[in-house]
Image (tube, rainbow, N blue to C red; front, side, top):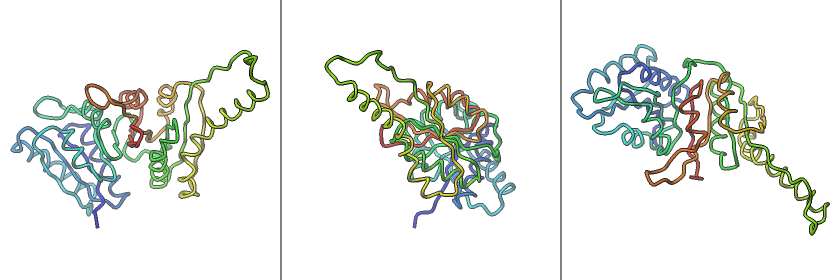
Length: 277
């Protein structure tokens, strides 16, 4: 039987300490082992940072099982490898940079583009025990995995779930083409609108059945998804979105919504990989 685990990247910086604290809470909630990872150019430098992290875990969460290891090399590769099969991988948004630490701002962006499992990026001004609502950003039915994660997250934290489907207004032709009957065009238009409105509902249909007692509200906003989600993060404990990753000559790149949240969200961000990459 595979042991459930939560992976966290540390480097001795203050934001990494915040990430460690959040990872501890998530491991406790999931009944998982905490996997502390420190990537360094020289393994001899890792002792003090790992000892400090281990001491903090023992003091704040007695009885929480954890492992702590140093990995020689880059942080992205190390965390992708250790995070494979993890319940969650947790990082901060900024580090010390240079040889002594990790530039976690860069690490979080690259991890989001390559991780195989859910990634929690600790940013914003929300504390680890924040009781705000869970915010889910949906764009299409390919976001089903993110929806499942969001419902489970709301259930674990006893929080309300808010589903935000943000899409721009569609252009409506001023008049019907002469060769098509107006009734046919009207029916086609109704079907298209209903299909667009149904897409996010289909993504959450399964999770609603699995979590029947979850308090969840859905709202469609006729505006760009990034501004709408960023505004909504003011009152959220965490925002969850799918990782929309496309091919690029320099490697897989994040979509504009994910990139905007990782750089400007007012609360922690969870990126859930989707099969539609």
